[in-house]
Length: 75
Image (cartoon, rainbow, N blue to C red):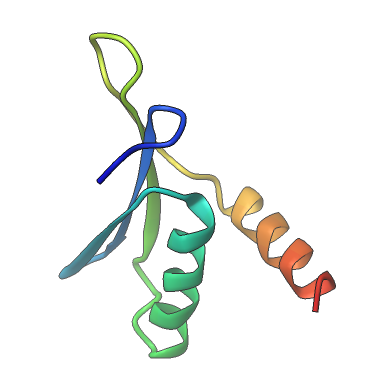
């Protein structure tokens, strides 16, 4: 897996977890998880690998909502 901009995303749905190189791919999978009824505890983590110390942060729900709104406006 080749990283873009030294980041990757982890979609954590409790038992199931996925890795993605782009935020859009992760959010698209999140939609699938939520529609299947397993979205209650789902979270999206952003892992920044730049430098010696990797940083793991939960991607804010507000930003996920903005991405979804922008995507729905493109259709």
